[in-house]
Amino acid sequence: MDMLIFELERNTGKPLYEQLYLGIKNAIISKRIEVGTKLPSKRKLAEFLNISQTTIEIAYAQLLAEGYITSKPRVGFFVETIDDLPYVEKELNPEQVKPILKQTYRIDFNPGMIDLDGFPFSTWRKYAKILFDEQYKELLLTGYPQGEIELRTEISKYLFQSRGVITSPEQIVIGSGTEQLLPMIIRLFEQSNGYAIENPGYKTVNRILKQNGQTVYPITVDDEGIRVCDLEQTKASVVYVTPSHQFPTGAVLSATRRSQLLNWAAQDSDRYIIEDDYDSEFRYLGKPISSLQGLDKNEKVIYMSTFTKSLMPSLRVAYFVLPKSLLSKYNKTFTYYSSTVPRFDQHILAKFMKDGHFAKHLNRMRKIYKKKHDHMTEILETYYPMVSISGEHTGMNILISFPHSLSEAELKQIAAEKGIGVYPISDYMIGPVESTEPKFLLGFGGLCLSEIEPAIHELMQTWGISRANP
View: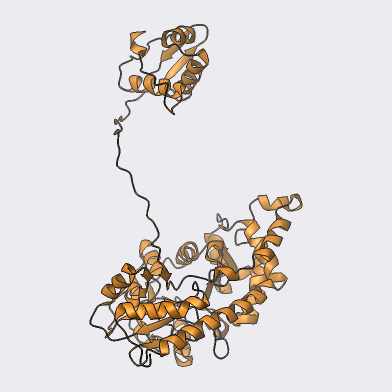
């Protein structure tokens, strides 16, 4: 019985059976109890340790399940032969790994924020309540790999009416964001000569491409969008662009550049364009910009978009539209694929769109964001000519630039110390770009209308920038 003298702590949160199980297990691993040794009966060990037989039974059962002991009917329990296992004593006070916390600010000009008060909770809740019912129990099973046909049908209708995208539900693939969909597209072009991306642009896209072993060519963006003449000097066979509202500069790809880009793709059978229709729903001046996909006559454009800005980032519903010429390859490549978006969420969104609520929501949010956009523009104009603005009239952020003796990094730090979150354009640089003065993105989506003016004034005061006409 000496071999099973364990110190059981009765005034602790750890159950006695677990303490006993760990004690015997560690003794077997460290060979303090030899292989083949018979363990005491449950009754004897219970009496010796002054604990219940049930406690002994649970501990023995766990050891038996994990293969540390074996049971012989009417004979007892014996220590089993096990392979040598690495055994490391745990530190009594192991160093705690601190979780990565999201930076929070008192005033946040984050361009990715949306207006939380504008979400149609009651309508969304109504559809959720309808669908979470026994009559829709089939939604508990795995659905169609490309996404629910009901949602793909509604997306197809919406894209044609609002963006001039010509597609059928069969060409649409639904997934849970760019991070999940872009690697799928990469698989379709395994023999590509590399990807050209906008600079500045989405750093996430750059990371995804490089993590998938792709060569990346950063292409400079100017007032007319991506410089196609620079693209033509690379070996890239696929280009990733945001033509309707370039992020983060806000530039709109000019008609000339659109033609040049489509002609570039048409010159080689291996060339394709990935069109990310960023922020296209929110344009405040003039008619909506037509999509590249709608202008494409050679099936060279893969159209991508999400419901991140139009509804909510946490919904995690995104999609791409494949040219018909790529459907066969897609189907062969992704025969194993299952949609990563829950079926219930897809059907809620489909019903929300089918009954016209999505269009109503967009119209309402467009008015809300236009008021915020116009108000921010109006306040920033009081700092002209010290502060210049660009990228306005579309999206949920404005780009400002101004001469200053401090760098973007220093200005960002000064603002952060005052509890103000700002986002320099250098955060979005993929490669070196000449810049003569600091540039920052100021998002207004997450700010209340009444917060915008005092927030702008406080930021400018923090940076030592005065209004032209105080």
